[in-house]
Length: 161
Image (cartoon, rainbow, N blue to C red; front, side, top):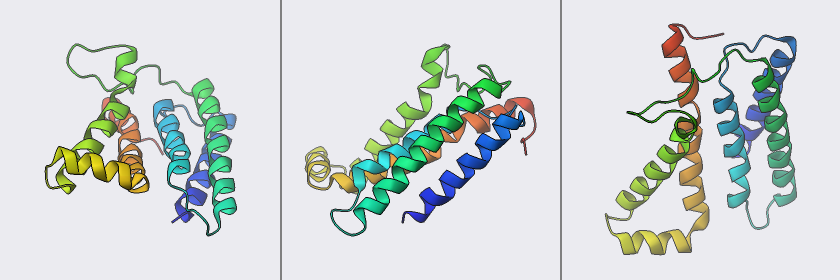
């Protein structure tokens, strides 16, 4: 389960290296921040006993690498607002919140449907099984964190290497 965080941390470290070399010109900072927040959200669903210390170390390391990578990409990227997901008349800082709002809405919708479309059952499930709830939102955050990079690629007409 935690192998993905080793891989994400490695990918973020490689992206940091590219950003330091100046090769991260068309990378969305929003995407890197979203993936880093997703790694940080893992702290909400850690196991009670088995290898807990190792997993905390992996998550903290991934979070630190992600934060450093986010800062490096922010300094070197040429993307300034092109990766904003615009909806209707909303512009500016509101557009940067779209992936997180979509994560929240889709997480609630999926929990509602999984709980037989019952609000009371959904609330009781969320209270009883906080790890499953955290995993649901974390999975959607993984998906929607990639949205700014996809929007950027679409607007530029190519996918950066």
